[in-house]
Amino acid sequence: MTKPATWLQLVLLCACLCSGQSRAADALCPDAELWSGKLITDICWGCLFPIRLAGGVLDFRAPQSKGSGDSSVGDDLVPSSAASNVYCVCDGKELIPEVGMTMGYWGPARVVELVPNPWCAPTLGGTKINQSNVRLWGGSSPVVYDTDEIVFLNYHYYAFPIYVMLDLFWEDRCFADGYKDFDLLYVSELDPTWNNDELAFFTNPEVVLFANPVALAACSFDAIAASAGRPIDEMFWCAGAWGGIYPLSGHAHPGEGIAPRQSSLLMTRATAALHRRGLAHRTVGDDHVCGGTISPFIPKSQYATTMFYPVADTQSKHAIGESDLLWGAGHSYPGSGEYHVYILWRWTDCCIGF
Image (cartoon, rainbow, N blue to C red; front, side):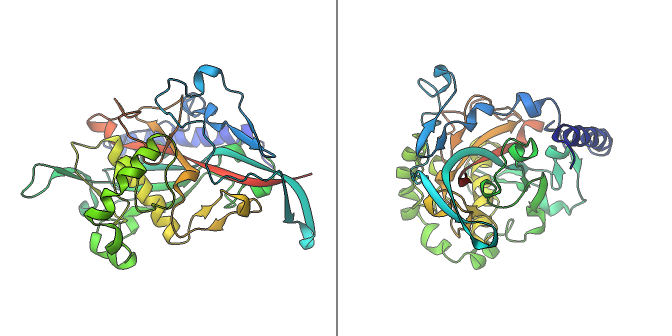
């Protein structure tokens, strides 16, 4: 088996080579420099905490980093639906029950990049992974008969189990979806529902119930809860202060330019769409310590995010729907600053065998 250090060196070398080629090919695709020293310096390693072990909470961060006076009020809160039992029993080899203790932790699970230039991959060193029709270009533009702007961005969804790649955890049940390497999982350029609201409606007919003024007005309650670090899972059609999750397409409005609020909303829609299609797992709760299960609606409380590019969040993560007034200042600027790369953190409950 390849040692983690050797594996990372190979990845960094390949990324550097690809980056040099891509810059010559396309100047409109910035390099997020994920596979560089920023992999160490620009990730919020303290966001791993708190850890819940056998029903107790462990937190080894310095007191000043635990949220008192911090902009992310609920950063160090364990999800309300997290596993609370001390012991657990799961089927082992040959279906023989194994007794263990519960563990829950925050870990980077995905990297999601939102790009106006189709097929541009800042995460892969600024390379273009394919050529595309001009109709897939994104950005912001005025809405007809209105002074607002509408934003359209494509997204690329990567598996990013960095703890596994660094060999920090060893229990297979703590890797709910089975991904143990960095991998490209989904690209919106191949999804016709992402740039067409009508097609998105036919694949998600529940949009009739939730994409209306009454349902969106109720999202104000979720916005307040999310800004306190407690998004309401039952309000799965809301992304807190970011807006409504439906329709599950790549259009967001209103706004001025491409702001973190809009790219965060589209990142949440992308995650919700994958849940709706059975491609994402629920990993939080006593019923999921033996492995993740398919969840057709996004369990918002099990996710949190940090921006990696263009401005890295290295001190705290923020809940789905947390107002960008608390964390988004200076996180976007014209040009390369309109390409946003996020690390999607996921709370995972698992059963560690004795």
